[in-house]
Image (cartoon, rainbow, N blue to C red; front, side, top):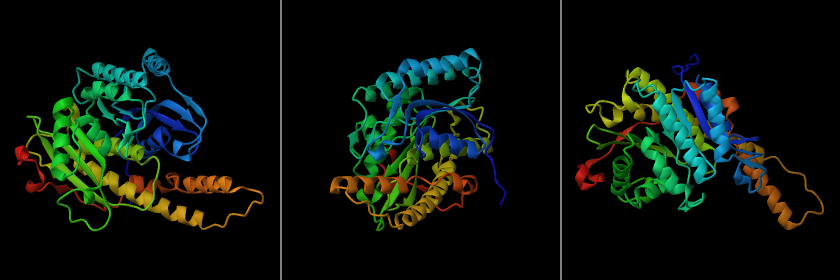
Length: 363
């Protein structure tokens, strides 16, 4: 099969940057460019490596520096973006600065519905804890109503909705609340462990992505896609998901002639499993799973190489070196796997929600 590029899409990507490896904009820029997007990267931090190494050097951009970079683009008339993808911002003030950029780009496109789309990843925490300052949460809550699509993980969805997700019904409630509370038309919750929720018969460990696009009355159209979990932690997967979603949603929306429709929302008669968001997400997850499987193979091969013993090292230093070696081995192998970014083999299917898994008011 020949390489297929998505429709030309100009993206402003606002996220972190690392010198080594693929997270933040280092991940997102390459992914989107590989699929044919024109990407302008505005970096919110400049680190030597991702923080999973437990040590790094670098700087965080101030809100003023972020604003100044955008002002420079405006002064040179370089703001003809179709999409903005915003990810990690290092402070509440930086989140507000990013929000101001997104709102300004929306205003510039106000007379031309569908000509600008904002994908916002509200990076706040995971696994039950915040890893940003407490004031970042209200800063995100303030700007989310201006976004077209948000990509929270389970913990972030709980934080935004105020609902603890313990079942499929409460998961649906959380998405419904997010739609209603923030008037955001599209939501994808990027990582839910369905096997831990009630009414699940999943035997193998599975990660589930839950998505929704609202109808005209604000009610959700819910779909799910189940993927097998891989036994390894990879940094940058959220950034890969967001970047692939930008490209594949742009492609799916073009196929449905929605590029002149505000927020790219499908008519009410379109079923959840037929939504452009659902079709895009299947391709996204298929590409990601293939890349991560190949990464896992390379990781195992790298870790199988015997490391020469260094005399004189204490136990603490040996443990540190081994941790760093294992963390490095798990860096996503992106560059040599662009073929599965462009031409994914579809591995999964979109599932509709069963009536019994919905809260009463949605049945």
